[in-house]
Length: 362
Image (cartoon, rainbow, N blue to C red):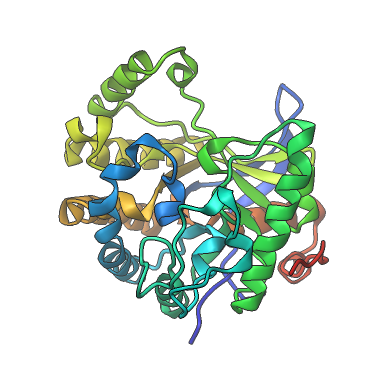
């Protein structure tokens, strides 16, 4: 059975949101009656590091991705977790012909992208990973991460480029039987044109972590403070989802589950796990969302340690859920939950899972 909730399928939306209220700043937000744990992943492979200085160091991480994904899905099945997998659409543009690329990938902008498929060019194409997600016994939320991992230009000149990326992404999803995604994650958290996103049928996006030091100038100072924050396992935020004026739910992120790379090389697994468990309890106490996130290739090196750390986090989440203090929900389920309460429409999952088409490109 193909268990994927990109399109119209049943998925759990328990009654954990009692009402929608405006904050002191006038922002509508969900009032939850227990904590929420959400886990999202940016599925991008080499598309996420192309033309960047660290691309040369990514091969070991990419090589270990597939095995890590399979083992993560086993954990999802064990703990009944529906993750949100924001997928770069170009991962599905592979071809069995190793001499020709999809015509969308022609031109100088994609001169570095090789032709092939998941067998001949596994760093660039991932039909097999998508099949694994679809075959997971716990339905997974396959969301969108743009077509080619292009950063969104929030200025007016970037508007139509973003719209075209979304149109092409939706077409790729449709042609691969994935339905229409409703969860979206902006590459590198470069956000903008939310109305275009809503017009394309999306219902939620992942928000920033809101760590004050990330906005400091330079590279070294934010990195140093990031390291201190991680090693001290400081309690992450667990905020409520907010309703964006464009008609989308912003699901705030809480913690990046980092790889053993850059700052992460100096952070022990125990600190990562301790931080996440603090986040889970903080979500329960304050009735907010603890939103953990990572990239699948982040799990590709020292996978055993990182996956064992996730097992500890999932075990704690499962314990809190059994006590009635926590629910484990995907971004899609959270958005449907909020829309149901906001509109009073209990059949909303059917109406939002099939948004109107916004175009078709060849």
